[in-house]
Image (cartoon, rainbow, N blue to C red; front, side, top):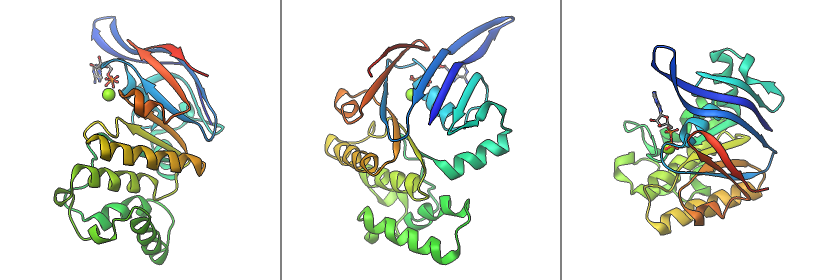
Length: 224
Ligand SMILES: Nc1ncnc2c1ncn2[C@@H]1O[C@H](COP(=O)(O)OP(=O)(O)O)[C@@H](O)[C@H]1O
Ligand SMILES: [Mg+2]
């Protein structure tokens, strides 16, 4: 599903000098995998996730996503691919504060070719599935952290992406809430969704089937 070849990301430091955030990254990910990326702070984990999520374009190398050569796509084409196939969950939830839960869930659908009634049905189904029907007219600030992240995951998967990316999704949650999110990921993965999560927690990593270790921009260890 994903193939990275000789991928690197660097920032200019001074004249002719660069700070390498990712170096010579080569990764193969099959459809249906559940992968945990671990490593110390500053290792390049978020950078890698944002490249995979097609938010960051300042990298070099090759990135194939389901047979598409992302490195050959224009920014706009990448955005289309992302909107259609990738969901992203952030540590800080990143819900839109001025929109209700219902409206937050409707946003990803507005980027795709759904009719008004299909959108309404999908939002209703998702509210139901995540057991947040009673919260649909509330604003993010009226929810607990755990509830906000539930909405964050619901928003990420409502348009049925092939790939779910999550950057420390439980980093701000109590352990019970975190476990709920991890159980949810397990269920989504069982249903066939490919998941790549960044985590500091061994326990969360154990929900995944394989771990990739990053350190100073290098892959230092992989478990098959
Ligand atoms: N815009 C930027 N300019 C320069 N350095 C950056 C920039 N963004 C991130 N970095 C650096 O890249 C490194 C990796 O960052 P990040 O991917 O966020 O690490 P992690 O998520 O593993 O903690 C850090 O040293 C960070 O300071
Ligand atoms: Mg990070």
